[in-house]
Length: 263
Figure (cartoon, rainbow, N blue to C red):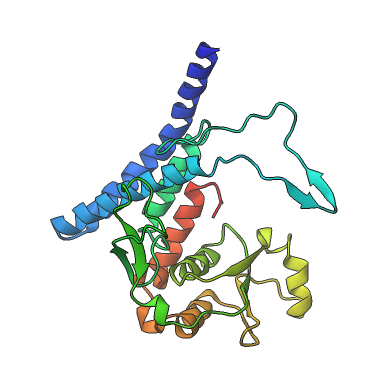
């Protein structure tokens, strides 16, 4: 039993090596491009910290499945199922490759979408909790978003996970901390694509945003991002460089490639 488990760990590490190499190469390129030593140090610290937080979240999400009601029937876990014991700062068995790919993808996008607009660390309110692994010493907030409008009803985004243009829009929505209903259209021809086509006279281009709060629907990622920042953010002047121009599209393409065309 122990030999089998050790062999499984070895296979996981070997599988993750290509992703780890890609991550190191991307980090080296980014650090070399940065001008000052302080910027380089800050970038490396942020990426390492995000990796630690991501590892904690991966393990924390392994909770005992709740009983779900579906069509009047109770869904129960399989007989003999044993819920895993969550462990802080531990990547679950078999998830090393995905974890490293995610870290490399995040690095290739310069951490875009990891923080909200106006992000700032604050002293935590004990009732609201703190960051995992910070001994209840740190929380985060925004100095801008509390003063911005919030949609009364969730936005709807028809999107294709591997599309770099859809990735930009998803990151913008994350930066603005918006409630969104994502409707995947794989290859822009499957999933919710038929539903979208019926409301767009046959057009199947993604991303496609519907904001029922303002009776607005639109295509084109750059137009959507400008609309979101102007309507639910501090204005288009606050759109970060990671969402603009050719660099945003190229790095978003690289990010999807690293994750095997996943978002």
